[in-house]
Image (cartoon, rainbow, N blue to C red; front, side):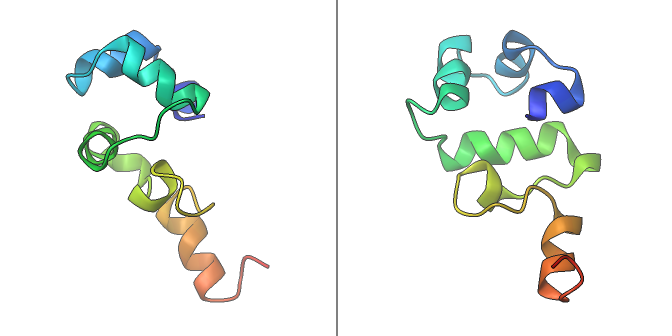
Length: 77
């Protein structure tokens, strides 16, 4: 989802976060969980998008800060 939204290819993201393209592929396909440091690196690559660490790591469904805050305030229901 992030790759499409940001118009990135897997290999570009892999290079930006100093990971192998195979690792990025495994995270996208769900065959391996994304480690904390890699998720944090992705957030730093796209600071204006406000992606949430919890979402990247599969801990919740709120992709970005705006979505999360709307739910907390009861406006997103």
